Amino acid sequence: MKTVIKNISKLVQCEQSPVKFKAGDKMKELNSISNAYIEIENSLITDFGTMEEWKGIDDWNTTKIIDADNGMILPCYCDSHTHLVFADSRENEFNDRINGLSYQEIANNGGGILNSAKKIEKIDDELLYEKSLKRLDQLILKGTGAIEIKSGYGLSLQSELKILRVIKRLKENSRATIKSTFLGAHAIPSEYKNNKNEYIDLIINEMLPAIASEGLADFIDIFCEKGYFDINDTRKLLQAGKKYGLKGKTHVNQFNSFGGVKESIVNGCISVDHLEVMNEEDFLAFENTNCIATLLPSCSFFLGIPYSPAKEFIKRNIPFNLASDFNPGSSPSGNMNFVSSLGSIKLKLNAEQVINATTINGAYAMQIQEKFGSISIGKKANFFITKPIPSYQYLHYSFGENLINKVFLEGVEIK
Image (cartoon, rainbow, N blue to C red; front, side, top):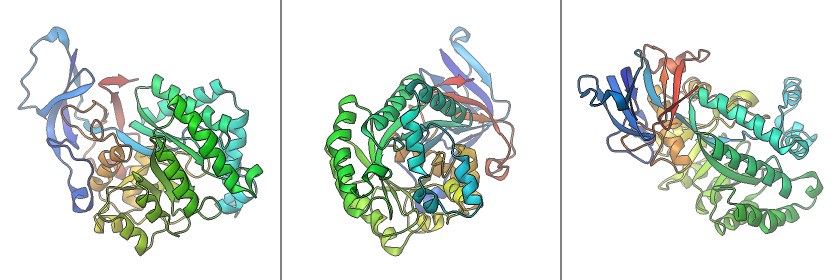
C-alpha cells in the first residue's frame, strides 16, 4: 500500500543528496519545498516534490491519501542522549536544590545517580518495562522517532542487565528506532567508594562479557568528571569496550575541563556529550575529526549551570547535535520541542541550525544517518505533521504550545 500526503505547506529538511552531518556555515542551510507532497511505500520515502509536480494516483485501490491541511512536515527528532529507563522521579532532590544544595552536594549525600540505582535494584522487571514504554510512547507523540537510551542506574551486574534487557524489549516492541548504550561507569557504587579500581574491574571482567553475550548494547559510555571517573579510567573503559565491538561515547566537561574531550576523541568516540565547560584545548581536540559534540541545553536549564557554547562550535566548523538528556535527576523531560526552543533562546541558534542539530546531526551521533534525520528518497518515513503554523521558526518561538498534529514512524501514523 502506497501512502501520499498532500497539501503540505512546507516540506522541511529534504535532501536530494544526503549528507552525514552538517557543521559550520552548513548549519544555516535547510532545504524546504512549499506546497508539497510526499509518497511512502513499504516504510520508506519513495518520492516528494511540489503539488504542481505530483503525477496523481495510478491505482486508487492501493493508495491511501492523507491531507496535511497546510501543516508542515519535518523529519522526526533524533534524540541521541537519554536515560529513559529509570524507576522513579527524584522531585525531593529538586526541592533540595531549590533550598540551596548543589547537584554535587546532593550526590555526596547519597542522592543523584546512587539514589536511582537503589530504586532500580528494587523495582520489578515488568514494571520497569511498563514505565519505560509509557515514557517512550509519550516522547514519540512529541515528535521523537529515534532515540539512544543509556543504562547507568544499575551499577551492579544484575541491575545493569535489568536496564539493558528492558531497552532490548523496547527495541522489539516499539516503532521508534532505539540505540542502547552501556553506562556502567556512571557513578561509583557506595560499596566501592574506597576502591574504584575494583569496580572498574567488575565492569570489564563481568559486566562487559555478560552484556556482549546477550547483544544488549550498541555503545559504551563513561562519566569522566571530578569525583566520578578520571582520564585513565576513561581510556581503560573505552578500550575494553572496543574489544566487544562497542563504539565509545562519553559524558565530559559537565562541570570541569581536565582533558576528557581529547582522551575521548583519541580513543575513537563517535560523540562527546555535555560540554558545558570548554577550553581552547577541548576545541582543538575536535578539529579535523568526525567526532560530534552532543549538547544538552535542558540539563543546563534545569540545573542552572552554563550552557554549551554552541556558537563557538559553529565558528570552528565542529559538528554538534542537541539532545534531551532525559533523566530523573538533571533533565526530567524528553520533549525535544522544548530542547529546540532552548537551542534558539539560550544557545542563540537560528531555526535552521536548530533543525539540523535535532535531526540529521542527532542521527549521525547514533550512526543511523543513512536511514534517518532528513526527508530523502530511500530513507525511513519518520516525520511529523504540524498544525498550520506561519513558519518553521514558530516551532521554537511558541515554546509552550503543542504544535504537532500527527507523527509517522516507518510510514505508519502513531495514535
